[in-house]
Length: 238
Image (cartoon, rainbow, N blue to C red; front, top):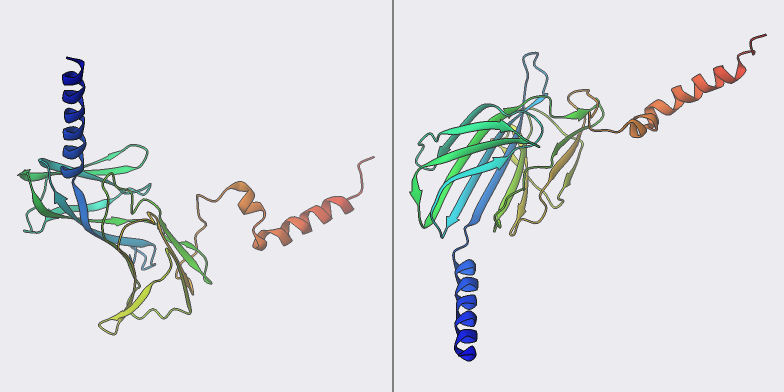
């Protein structure tokens, strides 16, 4: 009796493991594109974001979601590979979240969803160098088999230096007018994207910088030294 019970439990465990292994939705391809765009004053403060998410579905699925960071997404559009608009909602939790519904339940096969939106006040830095940080970009609950991060500069912009994370970027001149930086990953491992480029196009301090970072910024140290020197030389009150 015990042997039969043990055999039954063993077979049931194998079936559960097998079903978990086989019925696993993944993301077969993910493209995330960020294009610098001008704000109302013509300054390149904003980004237009396009996310292309291709699900490889092996279990019934009728909805999805994507966290998109701390900057509120505006002018949001969500549609599929057949250019059908999807119902969606935007909510704010620890980050902003875009949730969307498929037109019908999908049990198997590939299905692609596109998310388009704008982000305001994204680059930081000064006239010498700007930085864009998109640390949310690769966060998924599913495994991602292939991913590409892209960054598109404004038309006519000529860079002197570029640094990215992850590294190993490719450069392409789109229509001989706009430079495009692309980073490919066969399996998504680096879940954040950052790029530094010079010269800078805008001037704005990174709000995520700490007070200590601000104090010890080389641009501020000389002023702190001067103030401290003046205080030390000031005669004491009698």
